[in-house]
Amino acid sequence: MLRKFVLFMLVLLPVTAAAQLPDFTELVEKQGPTVVNISTTQTTRSPLGGLPQAPQLQEDDPFYEFFRRFIPNPGPREFQSNSLGSGFIISGDGYILTNAHVVEAADEITVKLTDKREFKAKVIGSDRRTDVALIKIEGSSLPTVRFGDPNRLKVGEWVVAIGSPFGFENSVTAGIVSAKGRSLPQENFVPFIQTDVAVNPGNSGGPLFNLRGEVVGINSQIYSRTGGFMGLSFAIPIDVANDIASQLKTTGKVTRGRIGVVIQPVTKELAESFGLPKPSGALVSSVEKGSPADKAGIEAGDVILKFDGKNVNSSEDLPRLVGATRPGAKTAVQLMRNKATRDVALVVGEMPAEARTAQRALRRGPGGKPPAESVSRFGMTLSEPTAEQRNQLKIAGGVLVEDAQGAAARAGIRRGDIILAVNNQDVKTLEQFEQLMGKFEKAQVVALLVRRGPNALYIPFRIE
Image 1 (cartoon, helix red, strand yellow):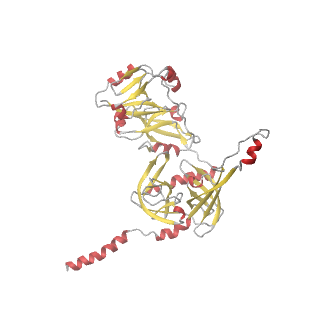
Image 2 (cartoon, one colour):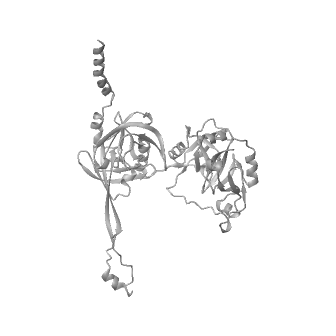
């Protein structure tokens, strides 16, 4: 009897395990036609490589005739480069969402549907900060996707990607949600959905579906050491993409809010020094003069806890919340200052077009020689900035770090840093710095406000 029961269970187990695995066939059958293949062509001009070129000479130059007869000067040549990507139809009249990098600088865009029809597309608008683009083909009654709510996604939930990896059109891959709200370097405005769905070159711009057949994200990029899939792929939440698409369709551009602060994460040590119960919020390291934050009274050393009623759990949350706020909106901000919470109101400004900030080098004094130095017992060799340095950096005081070793180096202090404050008490001279630091006991953590290049940041420093 026991033997029969065991055999029965062995037969049943594979069936039960198979029944628990999701079936994607219906999803692919219904949603596959909404996914398109995007191919782009870009024409570039370059000189004829490998051949000598005739110099540009005037006709009366004695060498003009020689170079004209014996050295070719064919001029620039045109080259065409092609790239592939994916997209999905969001309206029956031909609006399509994809990645900005898929269509960037393209001279010609061709969209191919699963029924083999091909259309020429035009770019309605693109946003490099979120890597979202809206393009348009001339069509009617086209199959369209259904949108889901990425906020309802759960880590561990099954998801499906459809796209054209390496040009293999309408390829289907599946996996699970690995994490939500991921921040990536230089990507402050997108809380990425991380998955282990196989995504490769050509998948960019394609949709990420949940099991209900709803689009929850746009597959945007992968983490890879080889250039191919390694189990880490990232998708732009569809609510973020839809907001961008709506602005692009209406105005052709994207506007974002800004408040004019430089922020940094609140570490465990900084939370301890600022009297926070836990490391959360966004620590303001500097405030732009005349900015909305400055007008509202926000100061360096404040920790922003809430913006527009929404919690700022980490520093990565604040750029997203501010960026999503329309310029001109009056917004409430909750912050902590001197271990007490307070509320301020500000009018959100508009973020300017992308620009690179040039960093100014810190000169060490006349002739490149360091000024008089003072060796501190905190592992730092310090000096007072010269009048020229203070004028260049527009600072009233502070002490210059000539060298950092031991505890200072471990804390992250670098040569060239200027220490402006200790626990929000301004430092004017070396003597004052020594006096302020001397008030703390061993193992205590203090917050040093440090000027580094054009920016300022707080560094937690444990007294040893």
